[in-house]
Amino acid sequence: MTKKLSLRQKIEQSERLADVLAWFAGAYLALCNRTTRWHIEGRDDLRAAIDKGPILILMWHERSVLGALHWPATNGPLSSLYDSSPIGRVSGALQRRAGLQSMQMSRKTSNLAASRIVLKRVREGVSIGMTGDGPLGPARQMKDAPIEWARVTGMPVFCYAFATSRGRRLKTWDKMVLPRMFGQGAIVFARFDKDIPRKMPEAAQDALREDLRVFMDATTARADVLVSR
Image (cartoon, rainbow, N blue to C red; front, side, top):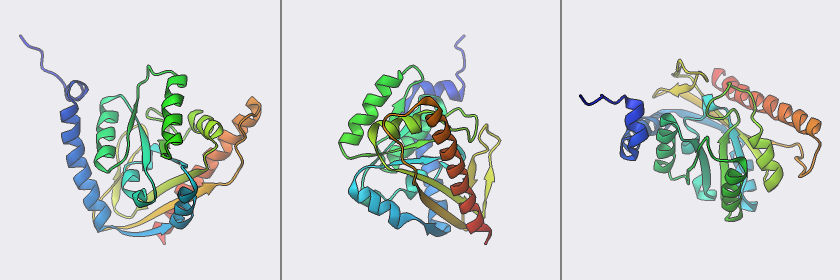
């Protein structure tokens, strides 16, 4: 008797299925994006920075679902990272649908190999987008990779968040915010203005990672405040 595959297993084995699911998810999110009345902060600063070269843009996983649609693609390309899990593969397909140059990062990929991929894109003038708390969490706990890649590449760091008056939080590890149509929304881009030197002691790196976590929380809170007004 042939064993029936779960949806997770089907996605793992079929890139086409991931693309189909991403098409439906992308169509819904694009409709939500178009029918939401957005207030945007910091986009001009972001565009000015992109005009000078690639940047690193960070977001919490819970606010990442609209990130691909809010990137100012006319100002420069963005290469976004996604995990090799089934949900990650759907996310990667969704990013490609939005016109981003998505990159799959396998959990078996070494830090050195991942850094080489990122550095190659940066040298080509491509900005990098990633979640600060990674694909597995814990939620809103800053990983090492954002500081490490900002340190190695010298790219300016921006944080992104969105909020909407119509939406729901999913029952996931990150309590992801999923928008609904016809709401009021806010988009915030904010530059992290602390220097990230190429060489620094471990204690300084830990302190900088904490500063970045606080700044990302503040960026997210700012989007929430704008919607509540």
